[in-house]
Length: 383
Image (tube, rainbow, N blue to C red; front, side, top):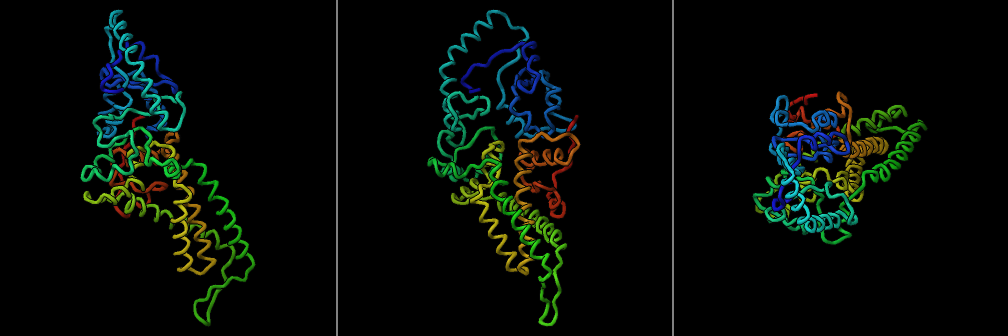
C-alpha cells in the first residue's frame, strides 16, 4: 500500500475470517497484514503462521523463542493492508468506500505497471509484488537496476541487505534480461543427462579391468570398477567445499564503496538475490553461466588427477552442483515438514538472508560453516 493511499479499516470479524492458505491475515497491534504470499516462505513453516491467523502476533515478533530481525520487520511492512477498527460504523464504511473509489484509477495503473514488469498480462495478481517506495528509495525501480546500483557507493551494502518482495529488472534489453532468468527445471534437464552419461562411461571403462595408474616407471596399480562410487562421492564432497568458498568469498565479498564496476558485478552475481530473495526466476544458475564454473572444475581435476579418476571425481561434483541448485530453490519455495533435515536447513538459510548475511554460507549443507567458524547461532522456532 502506497503511503499516499489512505488506510483501509477492518473489523475483528473481518480479520478472523482470513485464516486459510488461500487468505491468511495477521495483526501486529492495530495494523492488519495479508501474509498469504509469505506462508510458504516462512522458515518456521506454514502451520506456525496459520495457527496465529486472525490474531495479534506482536509477542511472537518480539520472542522468545525467536526475536525477529529489523529486516524481518521491514519485510512484514510489505504486507500491510490496513488498520483494525473495532468501533467501525456506517459512516466510517461510507468514507472508506469513497476513498476506495477515488483510488481505483491509481490502483489499476499500479497493477498494469507491475504486470508489465513481470512480463505478465494486465490481470496479473498484484499482491504477488510488494510495494516499494518509488519516490524515496535509493534507486528508481521503474528503470533497470544494473546500471544504477554502482552509484550507491557506501550505501550499497546496507541497501542490498534490506530485502523486498518484488521482482527485479536488471537490463532494459529484453535479450539480456531474459538471459539472466532461469526456471528451476532447466538445471536437471541440462546437466543430469550429462551426469548419467559420464557415470556410465566411467564405470564401464573401469569395468574392463585395464585401467592402471602409474606411480613410478616401475610401479602401477589397477583401478577397480568398485572404486567409482568412492571417486564420485569424493567429487560431491569437493563440490560442497567449492560451493561454500564461492558463496562466502565471491558472492559475499564487500565491494569497495568507490568502485562502481565491482559493486555492479557483485549485484549481478549475488546482490540482486539478497535484495529480492524470492524472485523465482533467479534462484538457480543459468546453464550458460554455470558452464564456466563446470568447465573450470573439469579442467582443474583433469590436470591434477589421472584421466579416469579425474572424470569420475568431476561427475560426482557435477551431480553435487545439480543437487545444490535444487536444494537452494527448495529452501526458498518448499514447505518441508517440521523436524526434517530440510526444515532446519530452510530456517538456517532464511536467517542468512534476513539476519546473518556474514555467516551461514553453506546451502546444501552447513558442514563447512563449522571448521571456518561461520555457523549461524542455533535458534528454534516455536511450534
